[in-house]
Amino acid sequence: VVHPFQIRDKNDRIGIDTRNHYLNGSVHYKQVTIVIRSTVVNRLKLLLGLNELLFINGTDFRKLDNNEKVAINRRIENCYYQGTVNGEETSFVALSTCNGLRGVIAFDNGSAYGIWPLDGGDRGRRHPHVLYRTKWSQSASCGSQVGE
Image (cartoon, helix red, strand yellow):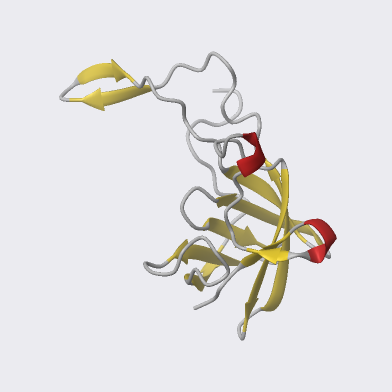
């Protein structure tokens, strides 16, 4: 069990909530740094950027309900980040920060860690998460292949 935190201006350590409350609380910071400490990995400093290309203006979202397509009329919150581990240029990190941290931290050698929030705590510095070992394959794919 780990308790990740963010480093923001002047190295202030704050909770994991990436929402910019100065801009109505529904917009997330474009760049964030999250630190995870554990006995397994010592210290991981994640350098992350908001994935602004994930939801392009004009994207039409639909929800399938009883075999009928229903338009989703609410704004989808973009809390999806990608980046690297500080000092590990070939690493890859992909995280959601909407309600705790969910995602993967992968290294070029195939080792990887997953992170998942636990119940309890808050979005502050004491929000517990599970950090677990997993495997990562650079040859894995999802959906269609290039050229299909």
